[in-house]
Image (tube, rainbow, N blue to C red; front, side, top):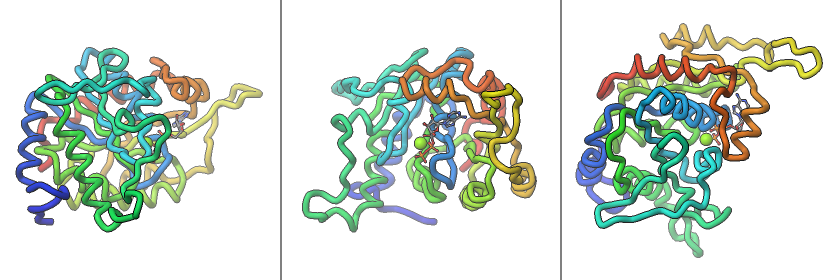
Length: 284
Ligand SMILES: Nc1ncnc2c1ncn2[C@@H]1O[C@H](COP(=O)(O)OP(=O)(O)OP(=O)(O)O)[C@@H](O)[C@H]1O
Ligand SMILES: [Mg+2]
């Protein structure tokens, strides 16, 4: 799709140039996406960022979910004051030096983001405003030198394409699903859309793939078997990781102290796979 206007109030070329400048020292950009909400995108993005940082990778993490940001909560960073310099906004430094930016830092307490304004006058412009706000988060932040910028997307098949309008390049995207037909249908749609847009899909992560019985300790599926492998094969996608339900990790993320060894260390392997598969500017 050819676009030369929006974000809302500025020429797109100017906005893109500003973002490209901000990301000029960023080696890779990786999107964590899903057509489906609530399947663990942010959980995966946060733990992947931590696993990468543990490997010595300089990581940035952009929470691109403007309406329901959760990265700051999971990393224990809510309420951190933003620091503005003459040249831009400093990202908030999280555990292991992860450079984080999120709409959460701009909102007071649990104040919801209100695109409409008191009289509802903004509603017709919502998508343009959202894209503009995302462009601001990307383009106002002094990302500095990064080996990888992870971008945690909001749910929906169109989120990735909105991001592509803004980025100079996307190295790749990771789709997150849970093993239910309902989730897989939404993920299939969003992956097909990503392919149409020329995105390099690094693979799919199956979250909540299994659980351990609290009574007997046996590991088994959490949902009835669904065909993640079949959909992945149809879409020519690698299954990068299968992440079990981890009650301890959920509690730790709630407390803002995510576990280094969440989900039995699966994220270390995912970090290795993701870095191997992502090459600079592979897509677009
Ligand atoms: N493997 C897991 N084990 C335990 N808890 C998990 C796991 N995956 C996700 N969770 C928890 O489930 C909840 C939903 O996950 P998360 O917020 O990451 O989903 P999401 O896909 O980002 O949602 P949204 O579509 O709203 O952005 C969170 O509280 C998260 O900590
Ligand atoms: Mg999320």
